[in-house]
Length: 261
Image (cartoon, rainbow, N blue to C red; front, side):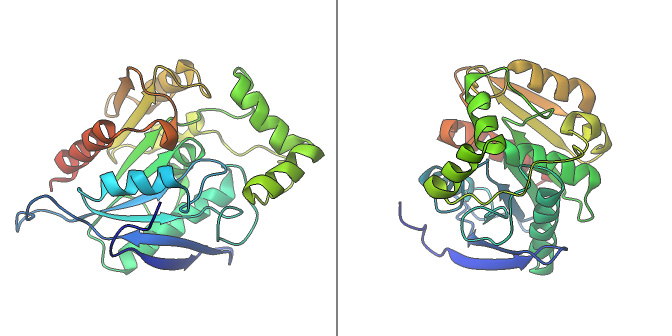
């Protein structure tokens, strides 16, 4: 899939010195923005093994640009970024932090983080623990806790993460570069999501998610508290690959109403 018109490359440096590569997709609003409204910049955080070069992420950016500028970075260890993947742990919080700070440095008014799967957990943890707080958070198909093995898909992911053969395959097949397995697990999204309030939060999960069962969504929604919006979407699968234009439009409309655009 070709780059969307007007897309430009971007590089930012995380607090620990890792250079991150990505793209900026300019907004293509269907109608002029009211003069007293806030322009939205989306910071998109992809799922594990994904990158900004993948068609499903570029397709999502095309749908999302109708609501604002889209800035998507390859997480460390993925795509064209440097470093080694922390599998959604503390290094990924630094990556999202850097992306939000860079958007604000470039003049962004309202910054909304939108993460999927691993990226969903990362934006939740960043909004709770990071240094560059977003104006709103959207977590799609987010993991709630670590070491999930209750689905066949996640058992395959853990084989990829935890075995020598799996790590070699990840490097060869998708160019994934991994840090050693955690010695001490970081705080899980479920443990910190309550700290996000009063920042607006939207949790989105599909009833056909083949990676994370509904207990992840329900646990996050309960822990986040009554100020968070939570959508269980019938027929929706998982993250970027399962997203549809109507779902992304619904998310965009929630952001517009929440931010006041």
